[in-house]
Image: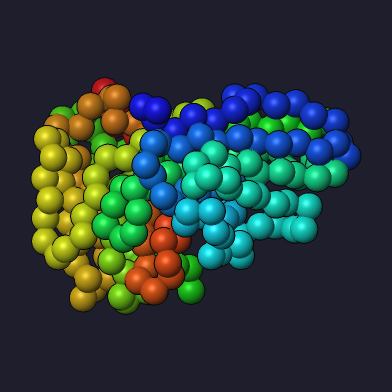
Length: 114
Length: 112
């Protein structure tokens, strides 16, 4: 596709429910990143994929968070048993490959847990 | 020590003047450096990338990299009200696979 696509754009869910956030990277981009941005805060790194593997999962806040990527393309971030503190904008970015290439962001998914 | 540091601002600059945004990083062997602009309620937009020491110019924007001093800066010439946004510095440390680390951003306000 022309750019990074994330869905849904907005998600309101009840506390305790599970949610899935989707990211469709730019075609041919092998690296994919997930970040979280709370209101008025900076970007918090969650996880990144090189192909289908995730070399660095250090940013996942708890074991309620998981992510996968299949076919070296679409990625899904799953949050189980959502809590109010999970409310934030979840941003996905993709990158052509290794160092010295640029990363481009999708429009984000705004998650609100009520 | 924070890996990527920026002054949070706000930085107020008169319209038409030069805005100077600075960023320092802790990983001495970092390889790739990026500046993103983020408008309120929007996702970050890539402005500049720089990979080697010196200056890189693109229109009204100039990125400057000094690896020995571990800082990277962004200059915006002829500042416009539309430049008012938060500017994020990002660093790709060497040996950290492809992880990209962001600073918390500097809020820039261009005064009409």
